[in-house]
Image 1: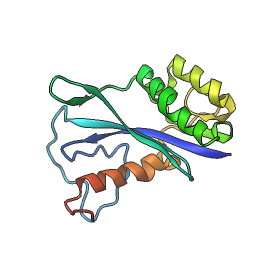
Image 2: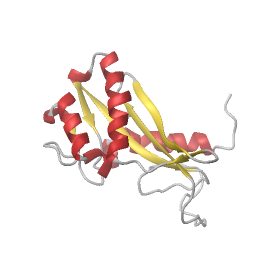
Image 3: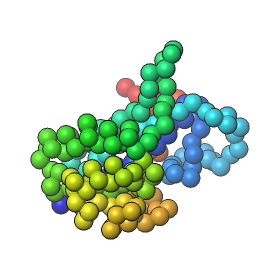
Length: 165
């Protein structure tokens, strides 16, 4: 058995980092005050991974009149991601029966159709999430490597002024 960690985050286009959900390490003071727009442009990301593989970094977007735009993630969209990408990726690696899925208790993750779908593939005993027998500890990002490391690292890479070679 191994844990399949999952999480979603918003990557704000204008270098705005919501520090409530993200742990970052920086050389300069990250508590400086900077004005931020009320509704800044952002990209909604989702990632799922184990110690062996990454099931994907997915971007939630809709086709707008001029360009793709970020969309609100709801239980229908999240269920579609699970059904069309995540479960097939786990089935391809023959590990659905040996994985424990861990997700936070965001509203899209605990919709009735999503809970039913997860229970069908993992059983209630292999799901760590709100509204399941094994509840995720509230406000504890230390338990999920996405919050603890991944999102901060991705934001550092995207917003870094240096070029990667």
